[in-house]
Image 1 (spheres, rainbow, N blue to C red):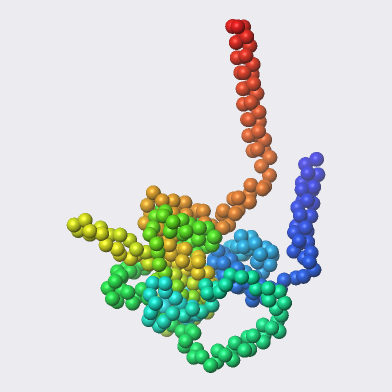
Image 2 (tube, rainbow, N blue to C red):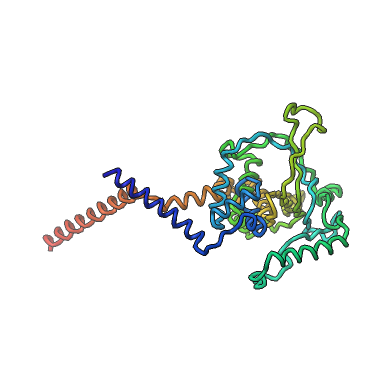
Length: 381
């Protein structure tokens, strides 16, 4: 009889998997991987960041398999990532070497190198474009041809290149303290479980792997009053970050023996956060501290939110949940949180029946007690 139950369960699961495939294919259209990679840039960047795996094509496959569900796609990519060997660690990547596509500051109108708006929805009307319904590949090719001809008339240096950091400009003017170097080897949270108190490298990794909506929500809570004043974007930059590894044969050789292995697109945000400082004679002055965020692809809201939470967690005031590292870091991970919530759908027959039996016994005991009290009172009357 036990075998029959197992067999029946297996068949039901197999039919469920078939039904899921049917739901994906029932319109008779297959969504091509190249179409996902080309047309779902925002989703791909979000999933890559939360998966800690930079690969647009693998991410497109996961998105197709997950039918556009970002949490499921992240789960699949992290599972795949866990099978990959880590052969090298890159050298320290300096964001000042980033080839810029977009670079703005909300703190200063005029910054060294100028503002580069790049690709952004910040200045668009949030209205549905019904023209996309009839858009064709030929339309795309024609538009690209015209755009490239137009771009040839404009100097490339006005669009891309390397730019100085805005905060370095402030430091040179003595308006911001220098950051002390931290040469400690970063912790790798994918190899060693998070421990408390956490190191800053652990916090930054968890934040950049965190579910974008959760990170954004907690950063919004900070701004609304849970631990911080109003922050300002000192500099937001998006571009291609070159990566290098040491000589795989002799890692102690000179810099010229490093190997360029490619580049990744990243979003970096440096947040300026005003902090009141008590001076002598009861005077209070405002100084600026920094919050830092960086993540794969173009994901500006998340990078900014990371910067806010980075500063918030550095403060570590238990008065605010947004400054409690255990509260923040344990609850923003999409795989951990959705996994635990989803497990509630799994069979809990034994535990629930145990609770139900407990409730029944309690109610039965209450009924017996009520009967005894009613009988006693009747005798007294």
